Amino acid sequence: MRSSHDPIPVTIVTGYLGAGKTTLLNRILTGGHGGRLAVIVNEYGEVPIDHDLVLNIEEGIYTLASGCICCTVRDDLVEVLDDLLARREAFDHILVETTGLAEPGGIIMTFLTHPDAGEAFVVDGIVAVADAVHLPAQLGRSPEVAHQLAYADVILLNKCDLVNGTAAAVLEEMIRGMNPLADIYRTSQSDADTAVLLDIGGFDPGRIRIVRNGAAETEHRHEAHIDAISVTTEGDLEPERFEQWIAELIAARHEDLYRMKGIIGMAGQPRRYIFHGVHGLSSWQYGERWGDEPRVSRFVVIGRGLNREEVVRGFRRCAAPGVPG
Image (cartoon, rainbow, N blue to C red; front, side, top):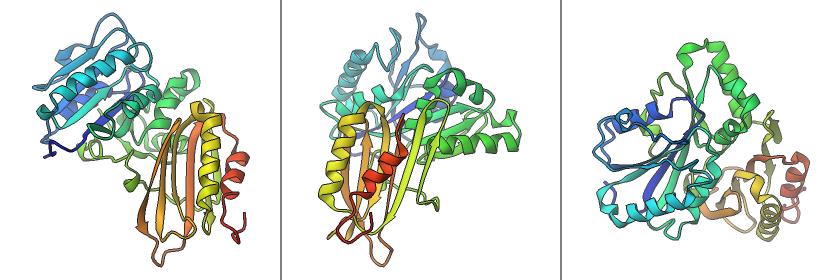
């Protein structure tokens, strides 16, 4: 049970129209997780969500029906958060279900920049639901789909019962190319285990992990102009050089930087330097000691219209003296 002094975790559920977000929300709420949930739902259009679709709810439901939560009702979202914080003893977790047309960046930034962020609540993670049947066509015509996948910490490739295994594998590889940081689960009827949805730690620098892909640097670009660039280098970086490079990158391209994560060896520091960024916000902390493990730094950036050569060159120029750049 969450202490009354702990920040309230927030899970944002996103996904395109018809992907299975409401079904997932119902599964979470009836999944025997043992927590007390507050729910914020957003329906784009004149008719708000039918609360009968949200099963067995004893907690409060807030409906934002005046427009897309990512843009026109952000002030309303802040008001809801303030109301929730006034009775924070009544629940342990906040769920936000966005409209299928939402671009998650604005929602995330609303939480991260709220005056009580970090103390009263913390973003636990972004869950994106993808429609395995219609995903290729949606990516070709709706940029929101790619953005939803790019921000996610967990991606549910849903409706896998309606496609064969080969097609699901191809889709999964496509998604990994757009977001190598997310955990991907194949589901039918959004039947994901709540254990992988409500304790993600996607914005906790102390829980960041980057899967080794065996390549020094890679880039994946999709039709929607989503770039996933990873760079790996042996040896330490110079802290001042890295901080200056990150500051310059954020200043120049913050609107295009969706997610950044890094596990870095810093000169003179026995512990791992853990970096995390979203748009113009970034944070870092020192993690576990390197011990006998080789000090190999890994950095991943997901964004729009990025230049692989510039990112790789900039990162490697941060090498400490004596380390090949």
